[in-house]
Image 1 (cartoon, rainbow, N blue to C red):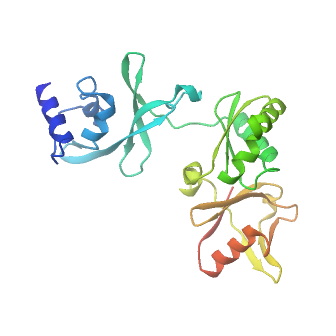
Image 2: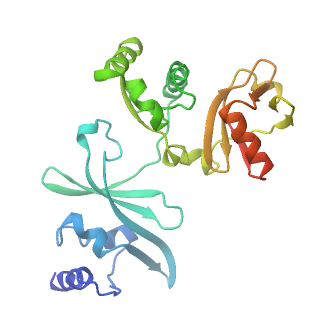
Image 3: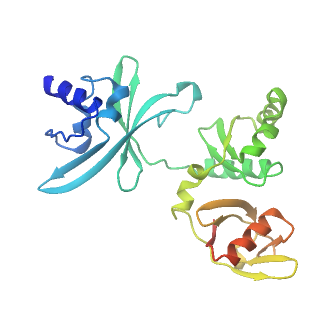
Length: 268
């Protein structure tokens, strides 16, 4: 214990040093500090863990502190300081450390598997909100709660004065709705290529740009990206195409991207 406290003091004083501990796996090395030092300063003392097994680097983890709702919980009032342990290479969360009652717990972060019913509900909710915003992403956070991601400029309009608009949506849909800003983090899974990239051809005319898809894409929702940035979500027409006018803001962005050789992708 004395050695752990000395290491913590030296790290907090700004001394760059490497500590060596014996553990059966990478997260056990972090757990040995739990209880010996305060949870909030662990990422300042241990920012990187290199686990060596059989003489080779087996795992590298990085630590950071955020305020969030722990994985597996849904209610916003359960937010708390959480130490997130990420895989250094992929930056995907593998463990979370946080206070639960009087205990500090280390919880593995399991990959979330979305149920078909939640996927269907999210799509239906997106359709409803797309009447009020061009870019909408919906995620079900349980059977009775949904998180809606929209551009920052649309948030105030959707919520309405004293929350009257969002209350109307909640009564109509029968669920609790949380409106948040749409940004790069919300579309991480698609931008990393985990969605299905759809083949298409384009044709630029005097009036705009046309995207052509195979017949099986008729009536389906697709996400259009410029590089890794989500431009919008749209529904493919019955003719298997999408048309953007040059005077339209998104149409201008697409034409500009093509002119400058930027990568335009369609995911679905």
